[in-house]
Image (cartoon, rainbow, N blue to C red):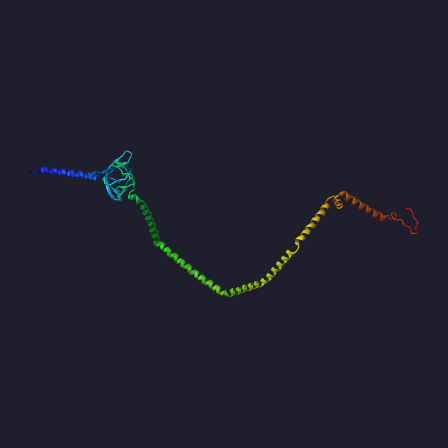
Length: 315
C-alpha cells in the first residue's frame, strides 16, 4: 500500500501541531503527562512574575505558575500547579521573591509545620519580598555618599597641590625659619647679658644668703619673745581676774545705787540736790549769815559789851 504525499504532509502537520500545543501548554506550566495539584495565593503586586515561573522549595522546583487573574481591587490571584508527590502543609507561605538583579521573580514556598496538609485548590498565605535591586538601594546610597566624600577629598588634595598655595606654604616656612633665626640671635644676646652681669648676680645671691643667715639667727630671739609672751599669757590666765572683775562690777553696782539714791528725793542729799525750795532756803540762810557778819563787823558794840573797869554802859 502506497501512502500518498498528501497523507504524509497531513500526518506531519498534525504531529507538529500536537507538539506545538504540548510545548505551549508546558511553557504555560501545565503538566501534560501527569496530574497536578492546584494551589492559589493572592498578591497586592506581581511585578516581574509571569506564567510558567517556577515554584521553589529551598531552591528545588516543585511546580510552576499556571495562571494569573487580576481582580477589580488591583490584587492578583496566582495559580500554582504542584507535583502531587510533594506534600504541602496547610500553613505554608507562598512568597514572591526576586531571582536576579533584573527583577525576575519566582514563587518560593516556605513550608509550614502544620500536620494538616493543604488540599487541591486551597488558597495559601502570600507574602512579597523586595527585589534584589531594592535590597541593594541602601548599599547604593552608602556608595554614593562614599564617592561624594572621595570626590571632596580629591578636591582638597588638588587645592593643596595648587602652585599658588604651594608658593604660600613655602613663604610661610621661610617666615618661620627667619623667626627661629631671630629668636636664636635674641637668645645669644640674653646669654651675653647674663654673663656680663654674673658678678652682680653673685653679689646679690651672697647678700640674700647673708640676710637668710641673719634671719635664722634672729629666730632664737623670736622664740624667746614667743616664750615670754606664752608665760605672760599663762600668768594672766592663772591670776584671779574673775574675782577682780566681780569686785569691780560690785563697786559699779554700789556706785549706781548711790547715784540713784542721790537722784531720788528720799534722802537728805537727794532732797538737797533735787528740792529747789531747800536750795532757796539754804541760799537765804547764807545771805542772812553774810549780812550778820557784815553788821557785826560794822557795829561790834551791838553784839559785844565790855568795860575796862568792869562798869556797864548802856547803848
